[in-house]
Amino acid sequence: MKRMAKKVKPGKLRGNTTPNLLTENPNDYTLQLAGGMKYSLTDIVQLVLLDGATTKTAQDLEESFRMVMEKGIEMSLMGNNVSLEYIQLRASVSGVFDSSTESFTRPKHEVNPVLVAGETYLEAAHNTLVENMGPTQLNVIAQVVNRNTYHVNTDITSGGVLELTGKGLKVLGSEMYPAHVYICDAETGTIVKNISEADLLANTPTHLMFQVPAGLEVGKRYIVKISTQATGTSGKLLKEPRLIVGDIRLTCV
Image (cartoon, rainbow, N blue to C red; front, side, top):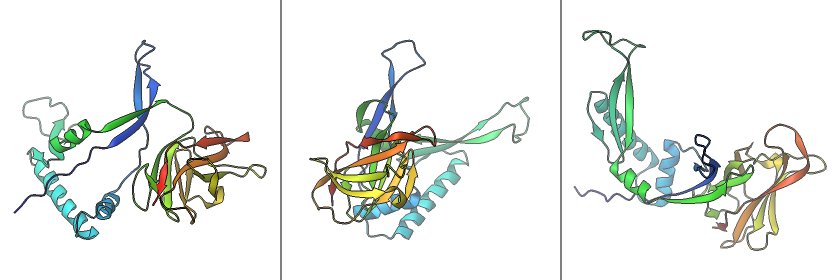
């Protein structure tokens, strides 16, 4: 049986620097990664299907994955070292035994799963690009996911769903200053479409989701802007709106 070649693509990470408070060196910074979307097994299976790399059904892929993982976990809990190329599994025991013959008893003792990145994962991580976006900002659109293509920071679908993560994103307005999310021409900054606060599918300081209005031009690039009176730290409104301008250019597909 011919084995399929492993095709783990290196990723691209984005992050902001924050001072390292554990040292006295004023020039010591750490990088906090932006994004942080959560993907379930079902989400990952859908991504595989969208790539067109298999003719299997979603149910077949999920069942195959579960069968392999469940058997791997079972074998690791029998004291074996299990290498699945992408991850390695084993078990350890914690707790103090007061004598050489003391029985294992919970909660004094416990079995702990140990998961370690495999060689394939480590190689992809070694080749992953990292972009330092500078000092941490209070209000920033860090990541944009097209829920139709599942592409990150690359495209937008007219009539599709767009998901934003970042900081200070909550959209709140008043009668005098209604709050909106704007889809703008990336070259001129001109507002092309707008989404009102009431039409948002998710609206928190770190997470926005909405349906993109129809009528965007395929091949044209767009950016997202947000007008909001939310302070980011409380439920009070600012006297005037603040504007968050995204720097991620999205091509309409």
